[in-house]
Length: 233
Image (cartoon, rainbow, N blue to C red; front, side):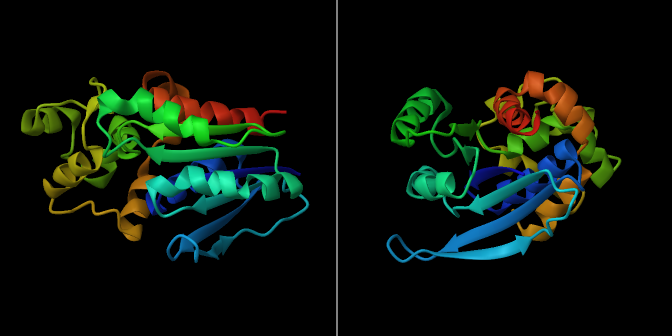
């Protein structure tokens, strides 16, 4: 059974990554454990919050670890790298937002964080969602009309001046705020609460995301490429 560890900065990323993995690998082929950390530096406590059963069909095991802070993703990857190797993990991936760092500083941020990644016997990668993972949700514009039929790309463009179907959503400075404003058009909101994130993530068109958006949203394409490297024999 192949083993992968993914470190994420928050609950939204954790929920999305779990669903994406199930869609790519097949629900019966993969077992996912979700852990979350709490407490301050030096007294951090890791709690298992969700665990899948491992069966005779399970081909892949993935630990999705919520560091609960963008600044903790790389340090957690570094601190746990040796123990992951010892436990038979074959690859480590980190996922965090660029926001609130300005987009102009993205390459400098990537270089600085990569410098602190550990070097060892298994591949380790860091993916920066530009500017936030919500830019991926914006780009998957089909899901808005699943939330409410009136939330068409034309309506969003007429109201806010950008079109999620045709424009580059990685250029949006604060995609989570865009999501909130769009949902407010139909009396809803986006505050990254678990039930809201679950609704959005379950509404995404994963075939569209996997087959098309990976080519037009580079940071999403990078993550999917690393997942494919793990899952593909």
